[in-house]
Image (cartoon, rainbow, N blue to C red):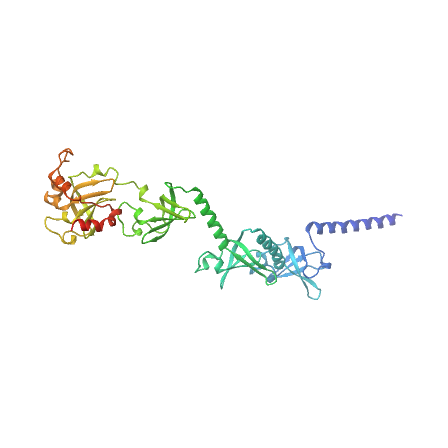
Length: 422
């Protein structure tokens, strides 16, 4: 009787141990290697790592082997770069090898199977993936999306990308646009993601921007006629005439690509997607109160900034230029302004007339020289407007008053003024 009880107890212990082993395998998700077939995906624990391979316990009679080349779709030099002892990993059954018929396994194939499923779901859902660029190849980039995904050069950015090397090692945001498992091909596009993000930024800017607002921007490019300013997704044009109250020959005199600036929104044309910007408007208008700074009848020093056939433009202060008509250059007949002055010359000029609204100041070098230049500066003439000077009376009786020109308004009336003073 005692022997029967012992035998029954031993049988129960063996059954319990067997059940415990089965429970352990179930909890780990381990497959029973004895029933494994080629193409199965099992789970096993890493039990040994050598220089060239890894042994994995998948519940078979002997451990399955993963050779170095089957550990990852990336190139690795040591197994420890991918797995560590005790790791539970998914493996793909390739077959059997060796005299004992050990299972030949591949972690790379198992990972790729999971990656294919994720890519198919991402393509279906329109999901954006973050992927590191692991290789630059002919015609594009290779990105790691759990397998080798290819980004053709034409799908890297909206424009042509000349140098692909800067992308190596960086993460990029991509969409899956084509999958072919049979050919083991996954085509990705960064260009599509950038286009969508750019459009989203444009929509945001257009929903917020209004005329009269001050915006922060970055100089994107310079041209002969102005500068394009990036307002955070939308480019606006800063015309050269809106950059400064003074005349400038080229935008590079004030700006450089990459420079951060503040600009004022002057005009909007949503239908054409155009934004006109101004820089001088937020710098203060030097023509405000100009009549109190440059009094008629007074002599001031200025610098010659431009020569024209009909006269000379003199800068009295930054942003404020006046015209010395050719007839007011000297007390003799002048055929060409170059006979009297050159650009950059410092000259004394007398203020004949100030028109702040039109941004015009008429000057005379001839009168200033006749009165001894700056050395003869007199107090302001306080006579009333009812008692004009002889010069003012003569000017009023003339067919047309001599006009002066602001830097931004020169070309408008050059031809007309030239005829008037023939």
